[in-house]
Length: 322
Image (cartoon, rainbow, N blue to C red; front, side, top):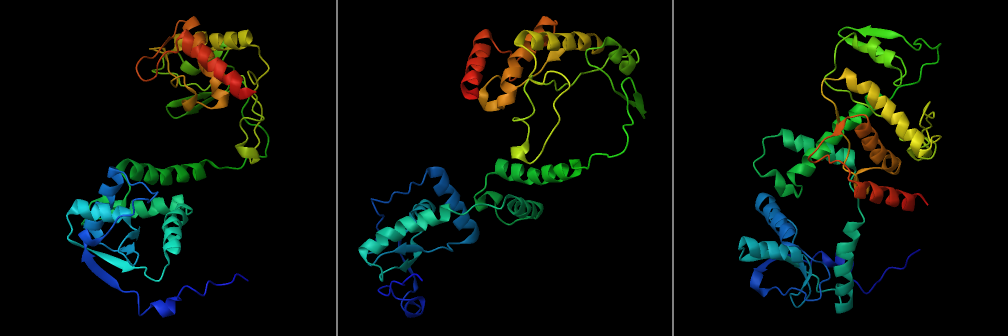
């Protein structure tokens, strides 16, 4: 059993000695050695919170009115022009204990984490209400609030996408054409021109949205950290050389181009920060294959990879693959 530090008065002993006091802000002394930094954006956010909800967390000071905890609230009070602020004196702590508590007060709060789904629900409930304060007073910026609320929809969509694989006999066969109202669904080979003829029925599509394999094995790359197992692709699942993979994609694009009204190859910007390891080998080859088939890449945010970008991406991929 951990031995209590009996030199520190207990909560019962301190109940009559620790009182909430209001003192002039000029009487407080910031600790020049405080290791915690507070930027202007954070201080402004604290000030908005104080304006909206009041000064509910007093500043903690030692017996000399030097701040032990609450430097951010102190700076926010100065920003708001407050003449007095609430304090609680930690006069029962020795200088060494006060210094240790300064660190503990900051560090221990860092060790907590958000329960993201519960947080998103709370933010959504607040956003649906007519509030008498600015929503930013809670410390979250509007873009983050929106993203967290949207995560609720994503969670629902993921739940909707979960299904058990059918255990009965296979129904669809190669060259089957399914008519779903105004939609047509064809089961066929993307390298076979007749597949497109059967699907398009003589009409041109506005766009063709594809997700070609990246010639990387599924096993070891798409596994959900071992929780899920997926079959390998029928083709381009790591068995092709670079030349074979390029030809494979080029053939696919050559089949697609005549079936769409306006052909452009759209892909993510070629940087490792925007693609996974599996994507890295496929992106430059996809672009170059599309170009070989006469399909131009888009411009603007989704840029064509220059030779130097492709070389850099391949070099980076080879390094992280080791």
